[in-house]
Amino acid sequence: MNTIFQDRIAKSNASTNCRHGLRDFVAQNPEHMTELVAFATDLSNKNHYKAVWIIELLVETHTQMLVPFIDLICNTMAQYKHESAIRGMSRTAYFLSTSKTISLTENQKEKLIEICLDWLIGDAKVAPKAYAMYTLCHYAQKEDWIKDELRNIINKDFHAQSAGYKAAAKEVLRKISK
Image (cartoon, rainbow, N blue to C red; front, side):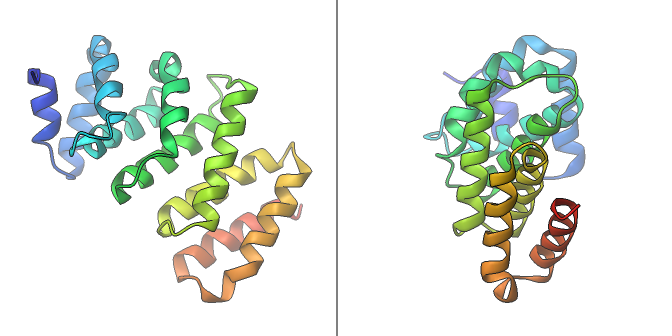
């Protein structure tokens, strides 16, 4: 049985006003976080990607709200197939990894690094690849092997990528060369 909140998510659209309205609703009613994350991680639900949209906005502005759910999110991240969910999760990975208000466990960091590498070498679209690069660039500040891996992946097929990918790649290469 769907709740009113789940129906609201299912009927939502990609407009900024709609997504921000749902983000604000959850931020003001944190008792809906468990339901939101359950919806987003239920990959059998055809609308799970719409819940991911809300999570990606919450992680940017209300990161602390996701703390109890980070393990579940990290464990589910690699399983997404819907392009919109993958894009949202790539942003989620970036904001989780660069947050100054929360600390990830080593296991959570490893999962984020692994999924970002998978997105970068796989068939993901440009946005998830760009956020994967930015996330890996962040971790490369402390892990030299990530710098080397990132540099190799970017240089391997740089010439065949889109302008958006190349712009992100140039920025990342500049940052990891410092």
